[in-house]
Structures are given as C-alpha cells and as structure tokens.
Length: 427
Picture: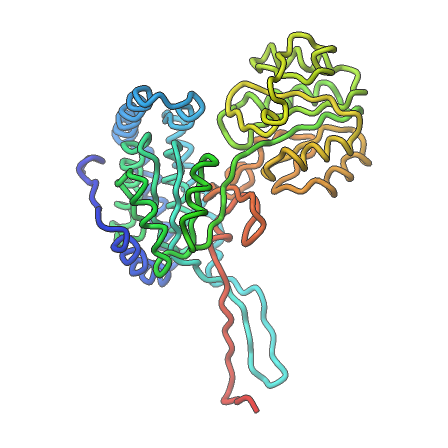
C-alpha cells in the first residue's frame, strides 16, 4: 500500500475546481446509500491503522513546528494538534455517520391534488459545498464525510498552518472514494494557501452552491464580502453562562468549570459568567474556578466580593471578546432580565446556558434568549454535532436562514417536488 504522502494528487484553477466538483456531484448524487456508507467505513478502517496514524502524527508535527515559527496563538495551536485519541475520534465519527439513516430520498410531504395529480416533496443532495476553515484538521474528515453521506461534492480549503495534516487526512478520504469506484473529485482539497485563490473560488457561483466559513471574524467577513454564493456562517462563539440565585453551588461549579476549562480554545466554551447578585456562594464559585485554572476578569461589584479577579480595561469590548483561552469575564447582575439584556447585547447567538432550580427562571430564559442553542443545567460544551448525535458537523450556524446550530447530514440536503399525473393539463 502506498504511503499517505505518495497518494497526494490534485491541482488546478478555481474554475477547474468548480467544474470538477460539479461533474463529481452528478456522479455521487446517483449512488446508493450502501456505497456511500462503505466509503466512510473504509476511511475509518484506514484511520485506525497504526502506520497511518504515525504518518498523520508526523505530518501534524510539521504543522506544529510551522505554527511555532508563524507565532500563532496557543488557542489555534491547541485546535491544530492531532493525537492518537483525536484520530480515533475521527474514525468513530465516520462509523457513526455511516450508521445514520440516509436523508436522501426522504419524503417530507405527500398528497393528491384536486386535479388528481399526485405530489410529493422529497429530500435531495444540496450540490457542491465549499468549506473554508482554520487550524482544525478534523474538519477535513468531518465535512468530507458529511458531504459524502448526503450525496454532495465537497471542496475543502484549510489554513496554511494545518496544510500537512489536512493533505494527509484528505488523501485517506479521497482514496476511499476512489477505491469504491467514484472520482476523487467528489472530495477535493485546495492546496493553494494564498488567500487570492480562495477569493477566486468564491466567484464560482455557477458551480458552487454553498460556502461555509469556519474561523475567526476576519475570515467570516472576508468570505461574506467576496461572494454572491449562499453562505452559512460558523461565526465566533461569545457564549454566556448565567448562574441564577436559586442555583445549586455544586451544580453551578461543575458546569462553569467544564464549560470554560474542559477545552477553552473551542467555540462552545463560555467567555462570560453572569451571576445573580443574590446567589449566596459567589466567592466560593469564583475561587473554585480560579483553582481549576480560570483567569478571572471582574466587574467592579465582582471585585468587591472577590478581589482576586483582575480589573477589565474596557468591559464593553471584553464582554464581546472570544478569548479562546483561560480568561473568563465575570459580571454580577441584579435580575434575570438584566442577564438576558446582557446576552442580547454581547452574545454571538451561539450557545447560552442557565443554572437554576427555579422553573420560572428556566422557562423565562428559554423563551426569551435568542440563540442557536439554549442549555439548561448543563455545559455549553454539549452544543456540538458529535455530542448531539449527529456524528460531526459542517459547522455551527449562528445565522437564521437554512440552518441554525450544528449543520449535520440532513442540513446538507434540499427538497424537490415530484408531481405525477395521468395526462392532466391545466385549464
């Protein structure tokens, strides 16, 4: 068997990428569920081979050394890092996606019209999906797998900081596609890291149907401002946790620590902690967070109760910041209404959580907070396609159109109406 490095192929202009993807889409959309599932199972099996894992770790080590030379942030470097357990998680995700029901062909509506024509609405693949992402090489597997499962063609463009890891992972997926009789163009990877090439791809509205940017504000803005193709934004995660006055201390402590520190560099980690000023254990909760590794930044009232919290230079700016590290901004609020107003002003519409033993507070929070996911008495870290039983996600949409929250297999389909008659004509 050839090595990962030896199997790397693929190049071309932006127009060629789009045209190849369009042709591949017409091919993969006709395939059976069984064939698409087998591609994913073959890729999973290869990911579990010790030799392949070693090659992936070596490729990732090149990226990590390059990342040090580039001076990228620790948060991005943490997202970039591959481990044996993370590679196994990718394999597990592939198997989970393969086991899902196939959304393609699902009938969502059916009835006979007054004229006798039988009409059904059914799910069909979306088309060509172009995903732009930064640092996280697992996205190469996640998005490629979800597109294959749903009968779509994928164009993947990762950042230069993860180029070696992404090429190696893409090769595994593309080779599985090829071994099962389909064109490798069903899943293309863009090796050209120059941003201008990305902009050229964003002009291919004749062949690309959807763009999904996953990264920082700069990337989201650059993509949105330079394309007429439909965009599903995986925007920043300024997530908030509100601890109500009725909250149980042990529950609040465990949730806050997990939501902030279990993996601080990801988009569903909290950046702001709101605490009701009547909560009787404010200092204890903050001390536990500090002991667990949080770097606390506090409003004036917070610092009066807990002086170890650092002062914020510009609270308005910091409350709106996605830190992606151990920093956690803390604000005391006098009511649930104030907490909701804060979330409305500073939250990014990603994940908002409440810890409370008051059903009235929970219902008000659930009904009035506008966000992609509301988490009640559990960590924001559960707002994740894998954790929510989707196997993986193309991204977590913070917009309102087409999909909101994790974009899974079903969200990569659209609908077609089929009308069947016996010679009826319209009068």
